[in-house]
Length: 388
Image (cartoon, rainbow, N blue to C red):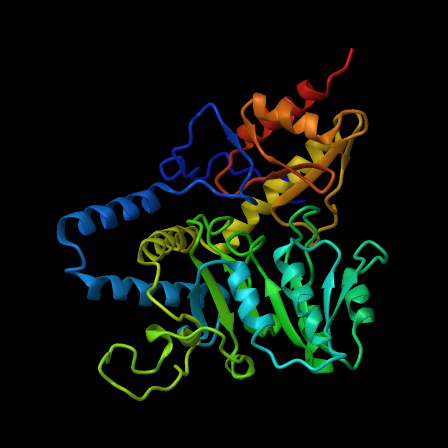
């Protein structure tokens, strides 16, 4: 069991994460604190801009190119040209949803546990006669089977989160991808709750589209997201935004004729978020340095420890699935008598930074959170729920 793995003697990365020592930060599924190198990259960029403006813009473009390659490597995509740098997950989902040519009677299959980003965007297609079908993931022993059962001959897209934001349920992307390929259905994955915590191989899972903002497990800023679009799939998307940056010869400003970029840059209509690009590149460099297998081992070990330790407390119910392969970095729990909102407030008062989600309290610990910090958080739950 991952919970038995002890990293006490391994590097703890306290030199990279300079959090206030009074805080126990278990909210990486919401917004992650930046590593020191990311803060330094932003400071250097700001200082350079203040003193030199865009004198070294070609260097900034090299950082942009490096980030695309980092994203390609993280996803095991075939080429950096498959990566677009967008504002956030919702924008990328909208590029897909409103880029496809729909016919009345088509449907999209999602789950009943999706974050609003991956529900609202599909429901917005209702005026085109597109049905959004919500599969109840707890109605069967296998959520993949439930999702498959919701598909029929008119299903165009299966759109799921790799890990559900509230319950922490982790889906088998390879199984779902194979199912989609067999049925000729496009496979769209909101990976914001797994990318940076667990390895993700786009070629192995057969995803057509993957999107994730940088501010959660990727340890980067808000407002800078990666969007993977498989070459054959991106040709199916009609563009809804146009500008100088998304054309093939985009640095030739005097050219009067133009054509859409062959690469995923076609989805970037205007000037890039250079500040965010510098920050996210620094964060991904740290994840690459640690190695995603090691990151995943630590994340899963933290989650297993939390589920075991919290489960030993009186009247605590773990809402996240315990089975190996069914959880990632999120552990959600509730108390049988203490209201979740009250418990969340009590924990914040004890400097345990977490979230109220899915009818319970959500802990989400990244790889660098220590076992001592987790033990302190569990002790805080015990104190916050003690009665009499």
